Length: 84
Image (spheres, rainbow, N blue to C red):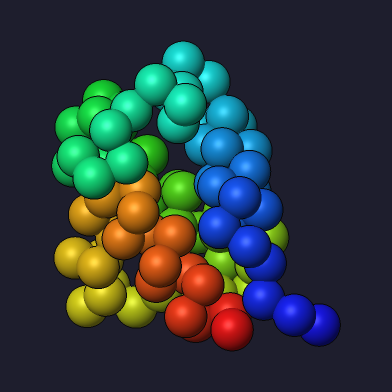
């Protein structure tokens, strides 16, 4: 199986996020801005997002790597590297 494209990863992130914070819209944020601030989600929502991504993509994100998920573009790159 090949690694998902950034567009496919973005769709998965948006889908998981919709179950956690339905008002958060990836299409309205700066992809290089601080992810949690751009989406106005708290640390618990962020943790639920990471857990949801693990369930959907099979990617374990250790807490020590959370800093690499600071923006949407960083998250897309991180997930792409971990899957690919």
